[in-house]
Image (cartoon, rainbow, N blue to C red; front, top):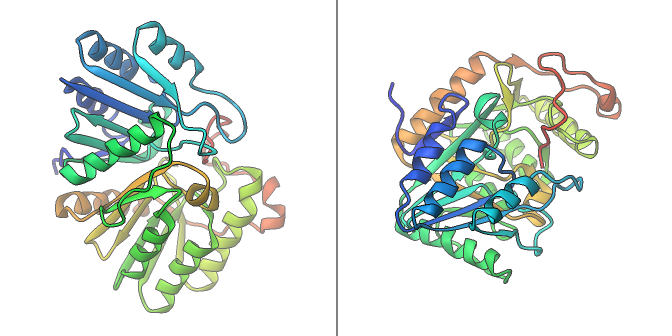
Length: 328
């Protein structure tokens, strides 16, 4: 089945679609990223600048741990003459992953622009061409570029942190009538977790595909494992992704609606960080996201989260520990 040009699935599609999108820019190119180190994408951005495209790049300065990943890319862009800035200090972290081409096409992704996320992790990117939504992504970029406060529209279908993301995610879950599939690595927000549980209690078939301990910080393990155990007690089927490391953030409702974005199910993601997501109703994109989820579910295993108080000592043996995989 050929994939819609509006959906990117990683690692299946690789870096090519992102390079192709950037190479389509003729007038303007906006990039806002949590982590950007992939050399082919960097080369494509610099090439567009040299071709006369008005390029602006905004990079997150440091992770919540304090470590820095974007210094070399910032220096390379600056040396090439590309307009580059650190993300707005109004947010603890800028975790948004967006690209806008010519003010007409936007990519909203769960993956960072790093080789790992094109080769090792399950991730998604949605390309939108709705004029109103693309214009709103541009307005969000401009506000953060100018480091000013900004309030997005409430009815655009876009989820922004720290503005409306929790509210719209809860509304999305509450509208599920028959099925709700959740593919997320972290469960550190009681409000959203309670809505998932409520869906199961009202008879919705709920499936949760998690990533186990991989990439979960010590301070998030207690909440994540406790939440997964509570969902399991309520009869929710909880599986662990086995074919790939899980970095995606996907909700599917009734095989008709999808929610894809940068935000984890995490208090900080909703309240302190800059995040961006989108609700999707395009039947082809939703169907293809469902196909990927079903395949991942078929390759997954039932997961019994370890006792939270001893979870720090729990060892996941399906993949080697990756010290650079952190779910913000």
